[in-house]
Length: 360
Ligand SMILES: Cc1ncc(COP(=O)(O)O)c(C=O)c1O
Image 1 (cartoon, rainbow, N blue to C red):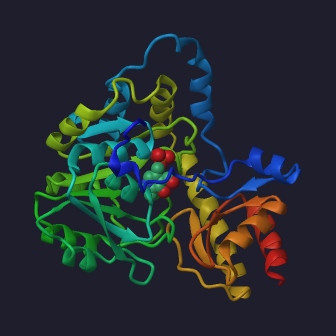
Image 2: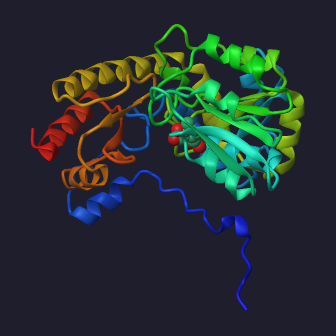
């Protein structure tokens, strides 16, 4: 007799992360490799964060503060919302997991888009729920399409804004109209992992106002992208006390490690670092847009730190050929790839190698 694993796991596949630099170096026997595959921060993280981290290395024998009290207080002050409306997590990945565990039961439906961040779908399935996937319209979340798919089984709606991988946004006005129409018994998760990169004025600047207005909205943010702390795993959600209280029941006791808590607090204070990142990303995006236009490659303009681009050739093949030349990107479906915006030097190297691979 073999172990009977849960039937919900049968069709699930492990998440495939962006390929690490070391494994490409080893596989292809090359020394210089750049990774533009996981939307990480090309400048690393703030020096101020580094300083405090170096001073905190002696305190690792003790468990972290399981309540992340200081981090919650720092966020509460910065965002002007009560500490009871905030819940830190070990990356937004963990929060997505916790949300699914909190609201999805077998038979429930959760609506999201195709294509978007894949963990919304896998965690829904993991809990025995059915993902309802609404195709993007013009590379963008189709909010009306989502409304049309609400049934009495709908428990959850996952919105990614800006969307990963397309980098497109829905506007504040479109969102407000949408929120008005979604019944209050459905949890709307609003994932803003890339909010710090947005340039457009019609993007919601302060999503905390959504939480204050609607009791069924949970905003998710992360320190992994613009703050450059992906390796430490720290993010947070903001929502009504009732939502936070329930997610807190399924959370592990020490889910956010001590260094992550300390780093996040310091990161929140360094707005200058965020500004540098914003400017570098914008410069990089504009350069890549120009190059893609010259190469006649189709792409939707991105409000994030990554661009979804049609390379007109099998993406998997392009992925392998670029790796041989020391560049890691993310192959998506068909002929589409996603490339993260790097330093200007990395962006230039990527274009040079892409041209080589595409025979241009
Ligand atoms: C839209 C989106 N949400 C969540 C995550 C997970 O972020 P974290 O590193 O905080 O787990 C990512 C990471 O790529 C993402 O793109």
